[in-house]
Length: 492
Image (cartoon, rainbow, N blue to C red; front, side):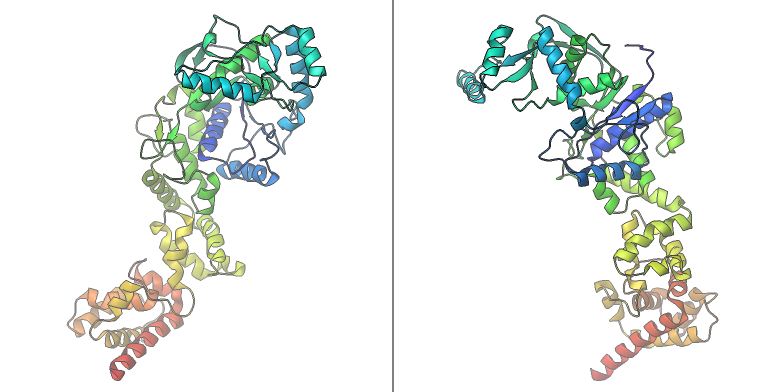
């Protein structure tokens, strides 16, 4: 394992072609945590050379998502730094210099094989049932002839001249020693016909220019590593250290996809997942502080983070565990913070106005539902019945209100409540008295009362419901439901 004493500098390099993937978010988090644990620098570099697909909207979404997760970067967009620019589209002059050097020194060469030729070779190999291997016939073309053909307008790519008979050894912090044979790597395309450099070429150039000490990324990039190391060797530079983290898998054991769960961090933000809970959960996807700790703070993570504690095995994205973590974080939130987190969802649903976000009834509602929420967005369906004059009765509530003598029971409870100070000191005792007088079990009274007050049979205790609704609305809901039931009996 390399023990380079270079200052720790790590990077996350997203492509702004869509929302931030949950796997990318975890990669960014691991890079951030390593930099913070080592007193190093965390860089953000934008790979925006795919001009047809990248957008400013996607870039802003990625930046906002990283901030939401609590990840700050020391260098990069909106921050700056002495190793910029931090957009690949602004680094073309740097790439051009490397291309020219590569041609002069011979580790890059012009290849004039057309896409049609290469496709025909692949088809012939497939028909002969043998593995296709790139035909390197342009590898030994003289520089003068290659230059003449290029000047004549013949299309070409620049390929990297892969040395033969070499072993490329990667001392990976997670996977241990990985060895590639250069004979298994074809002369790969470094620059396309449109003069745009390819990922492996610019990635290595940028990492070198920005003095990246450790490359921490998904294991799917392991196959790219030998090509990038070749660029370092050609430039006579020390490669960074590598750590390839395991894939995130769905419960079916396959790579996480839309079929097995949300894959974009923005989806989790929109659905009201608490940021600290998702931060904690992403840390657990392949990493552990110890054998028992599952809930920890950012500071505790930084104190304990070690690349050697990242597992080689794929990490299962367990949504049940994520929801448990979310519920735990919500239950521990100060009420003021929870109210601020819930208010936007209630406003979007049209249940409160911006002016209501600090009202006493809302504070009471937040306190009543805190133990019942796993996501901030769940407040809307769970508490909807407590807004407005009258609730909509769901199927179970309608069934509870359809029992014998329910109208009479509601009338008795309403009459008893009118005699009480507000809020009633012992609502359960009041209901118990009504039930005893009518020779009924408590459930025969509580269920229709809850149904009349909330429109459903679930929710917080009725004492809290009465406080949230207030005296006038509570009595009005009971009385109107009582009258409606009595009228239906009279008409029947």
